[in-house]
Length: 251
View 1 (cartoon, rainbow, N blue to C red):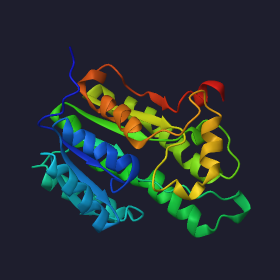
View 2 (view 1 turned 90 degrees about the vertical axis):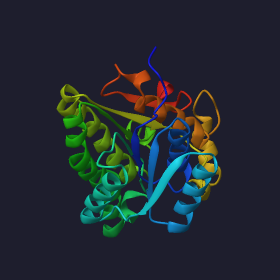
View 3 (view 1 turned 135 degrees about the vertical axis):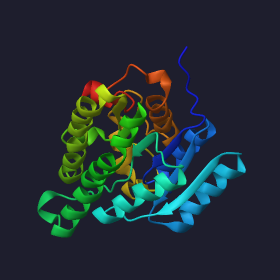
């Protein structure tokens, strides 16, 4: 039976200083991976790493602002150095999700959302997937959103950036799959994190539209990501896995 264990593998998780990313980093480390945690906040990043190490896991923190292409490429090199020349698992989780109606979005917001949500995953895959292919295997998991599948007023910018990620997921599966690299995506619904705390009651309103009727906890999304990163998903390729309490089933 294929295993969920990740012993001996190196994982890079972006946006891992809080929320889904932090939960994913902790779970991958718990299952045996050496994890490179990255984000912009060094204090929070070091805290995530310290918690992983306190539980016997292996992790390192690299500070990076992924809105700049050169910083993305530098992160890839640093992750390879920390991983002894390899990254076996890439989790593209970093993202920003401003809630604003289209006419109120500034040029800076548009540029930042697409740079971080779409361009950063593109550059990381370009830097790391070829090495995975040369070694004969690897797993890439992209984090999307139900806003990429369902029209939500105020989320055109965020949703469209993640819709691009979903298309890239399928294209990368076609591109790298024949060389042993599995590329999949998870599509979370409403999740209760530090980043969504500012949404207030709107988060619960969104969550109430799903059959489960509540927001997810970050750990519930992390479980799906860890599954897709593991050998248990060895025949899963190019999928967009809804982890949304059934929201898209009734969209």
